[in-house]
Each structure stands twice: as C-alpha cells, then as structure tokens.
Image 1 (cartoon, one colour):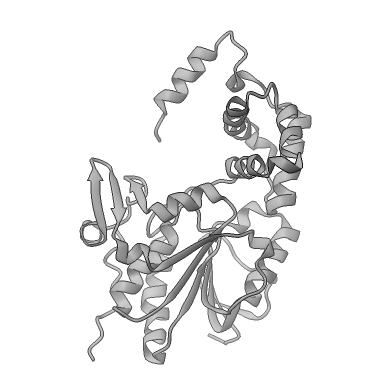
Image 2 (cartoon, rainbow, N blue to C red; image 1 turned 90 degrees about the vertical axis):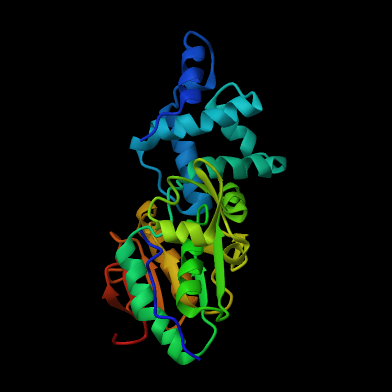
Length: 299
C-alpha cells in the first residue's frame, strides 16, 4: 500500500464593545467592574490558584484577575472579592469554585501554533510511527479550547491516512473543554491554517466562524483533569505540554514534569513551548529540537 507523503501544508488586538459599555454604565455606581482587588484578596486568589492548579499568578496580573472575577461577583450578586472567596470555600459551592478556576486560568491558542515544532513532528516523528506500523498514543496536556489536539489530528490524517491513533486531551478548565468538544472557532483560531486546510477540514458557519468536520472531532478524546494529579495510566508516544510550565514555579514544574515524564513511553517525545526547556529537571530525556525532547534515547 502506498502511503501519502508527510504533509504539513495545512499549517499556514481587539476591544470588546460590550465591556466598554459596561464600564461606562458603571461610572459612579457600585458595579463589580469598578471594585478594586485589594492586596489581601489578591493573595487569597493567588494561593487558591497555586493550591488547586500549581499556577503562580504574578502581582502584575491584578487587573486581569480583578476583571475576570468581577463577572463572577456580578453573576452571584456578591458585594466584594473577600465575600466571593468565602463563598467558593463553602463545600456546597464546588461548581462556583470551578468557575473561579476557569476565570483564573489563561487560555490563548490557535491551530498550528509555533510551526517549527509541527514541522518536526510531521517530518521526524510520523515517519517512525509509519515504519513501526503501530497505533500511536498521544496526549495534549492542558489542551485549552482544543486547537492543539485537533491540529495533531489533522496532521495525522494527512500523514498517516486511516491509521488508527489515540489522542487524549485534558484540561483543568471545564469551560474550555466544552468549547473544544463543540469544535467551533473564529478567525483568530484558524489564522495559521492554510486555505486548503480550512476547505478540507472545516465547515464555514458564517463570516468568521468555522466548525471542524466530524472526522477530525471524533479523533480526539477530551476529559477534565488536573495536570498535577494525572500520574497513572497508559504510556504515550507523544505528550504535548506547551506553554504550561511558564505559569508554574520550580516545585510545580518539577511535579508536573515528574507526572508527565512517567507517562511517556521509552523512545517517546515530550513537546514543550518554544521558549521552554527541561534544563536539568528530567535527566532521562534528550534534547532533539527547540522545545522537543525524546525519552531514553541518545537521539
């Protein structure tokens, strides 16, 4: 059977008017958007994000935290940030606690982000899987709204044709997982996808919204999981942990890499963000390309 050549040809500041209108309406009024997040309350939410997700929120992110949480204060008719923190600490408010974590986690991604890494996967990793004639297992950790695992699914479809593969995708944020499962994206999400890729793998819904075809959506399995608590399960041939470690301090980085490292099969690959590196944290991995490491081989 003739296999198609590995193909990566699929890879190719806006102000919200509603937010501005809400800000104008709140002038001179006691609205959540106008309340200042005090140092004490900022610390409470910083500690919460670190305890629950291992994420360090810098003091410089005060305005971002204030803006995002103000929406939850308004939704729950809570007077201030201190009361909101007390609310989400109540045992019966687990759902609101999750909504708070959703608001505190950063989710910015798009299809085929950081092209050199996708080129490496297509040109170096896929051919080895094709030659081995085996079913590869992949994990997109902290997958956000799904652009990363779906990018992987599209490139697999192009390179390995109908070969079976397993793509798991996890995130602590259940809201972004719902977006991922829906598979609908705007112009920002598909900005690096080629016109040919969009034509082949997306259905246009309107002027600037596209929905992935079922064949691609069905190749990814999404579930909610805390990265720091997913140390048990099957081994993966490729794990993508991109642009995650930059939000962790050293203890959390070490813990996350220990969890992920134990889930990678011998000879498997770990892909970090383009500006991230393992350093000396995982001696069992060999550097093979910027942000990409292979386990157990002198690659």
